[in-house]
Image 1 (cartoon, one colour):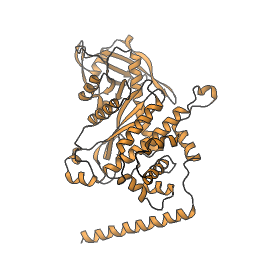
Image 2: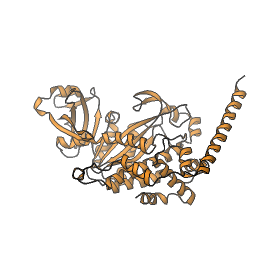
Image 3: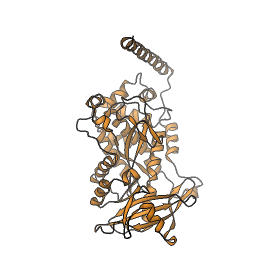
Image 4: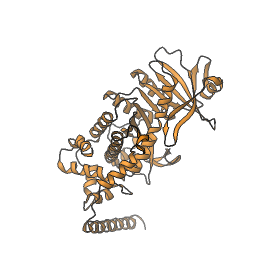
Length: 418
């Protein structure tokens, strides 16, 4: 199955050298290295220096967007389209300094506060069989798009303009749908639920959505324009239903759910305010929903539950395939690293879905997970080069490289400081 995946992207590399480097990079991303970067992956592959992997990411001739298209086709073909939902969300990678493309002090959910970070928006394809990323877009703050010097240094294309996170999500969703991805629903958090342009775009396409919104967001109801939490307060007790938002490691995720009609003056489609209530704390969460045709509450709850798949994708891809461990600074290198890390994660998701036991309870064990597939793959297939002479050569190279870097720092300091 690994070789099948490699064969899908092999044609994107016209020369044999980058093709081999790409294969080595994927094996390194799927390895059990504690840190995955050009230095560690090149040593894992048996290279004397990291120059080959660095060249692949920065200067080699290949198009990361074409590989992204291959990734999308690979995921959709293997995971099917039963209950397909496109889930969008952003994640941040904490960074030091100011030279890495897109980095500035900004809020990131990874840290839960404002930090020096690089933020990107990802699109996940989630079905009853499994889920994996199919697209990504780097968020560039205005401090980057408005600075020609920084743009040039990072290699940002001239036609790249500032775009909000919902705008990036709209572009990725449209690209997937235009490519023939069959998905009837889109799910996302409050960042995307608050954007009317994203919602209108999906409505024009006839695609349903379940997008989270804040409790203070106002919606149009038959009783007038009310805050979301005001609508919840008016609902009678009998409309609440105990439903599962999906299964987890510890059982079903049960909540109390209710929904109310909103925007009833609109003539195209149907719109609801979906409300989730925690059964213990009573905490409320709210979602704007749309569908071209009427759907029952259970369907909206099912789509809302799909949103958690992207959080699992972030956690698994960062932990198992090094999505956030890149040490690249430029635009092209970032897009190439992320698409290869996404492809490595998609491989784990596809293998897990293919090898999943239909009725695991009768077999006496749970179905294969991405973590278990990764463990078996690293143990049986992705083995590092352990030759002692190779390890000594790499140690010598590292010390020489670090010496040259140290001397350069001292020289720069003596030149610029009295």
